[in-house]
Length: 89
Image (cartoon, rainbow, N blue to C red; front, side, top):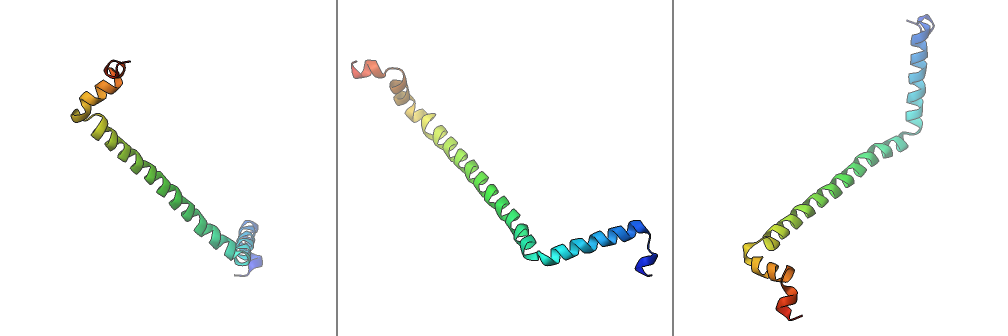
């Protein structure tokens, strides 16, 4: 089937596709760079997010392990509530 025998709407679509392919062929390096840049930025964002999550888990473990530990209960109470009286101020 010849191109001239196609309906005008299909001819317009084919012409638009040809322009798109020509654009991709001309700037394929830019499109390849963009295609690689987006996943790289996504990976960096996910990495930073996971590091923040790991840090918060570590700080929570430190807080519950030391501050809320029964071993430090007396020391914590003396430092927080009776510090002035225990030091003689």
